[in-house]
Image (cartoon, rainbow, N blue to C red):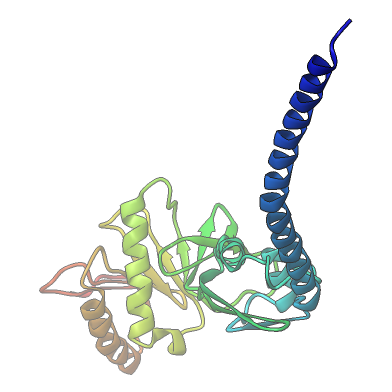
Length: 258
């Protein structure tokens, strides 16, 4: 039989182990409880902020070709999103993905307004690819295929941008020169015919003008003077050739006049 002394000793050992365990639990609670309270408080504050700052107004500006509804759909804003968790960078990325948008600025105005300012890409010309018309910007990037029956008045480029990129780039430079010289306001139809660099030509209301590559402003200035002379002399012209620096070739319907 165990003696009273040994029983007492065992009881003291158990009490000692319990005291150590209790001390450890107490220490853990002293550390964990404040952390839990902070986390819980943060969660409650976050949820309160989310419910308090909800996107109720989305204001778009700078858009002419894209409607507010189209921009909202591009941004993925359905309404009811939290101003706190809504990512301005994500809105920027989504809207910038469309070729119609050149730049985007996104700003939040608490408590419930999201401001989105866009700078749209301007239609520069129409690209005719085997009878299909595409609106392109000044860099030649396709914006969209033109499917409407009404056609906007833009210079038309007839050529293959993928087959000869150099010729396509020159065609865009010629369109820019046409715009800068004011021919857009004077003509009803302008078509750039681009197959090779030397054969680049522009059709102005039925008058074919061969211009080749480069020096477009100077060549179009010479054309303006020449058109006045042709008008005064009432010459029915087949085409005009401006590819040569020191001479102009005018081909009337029946003969060539140098």
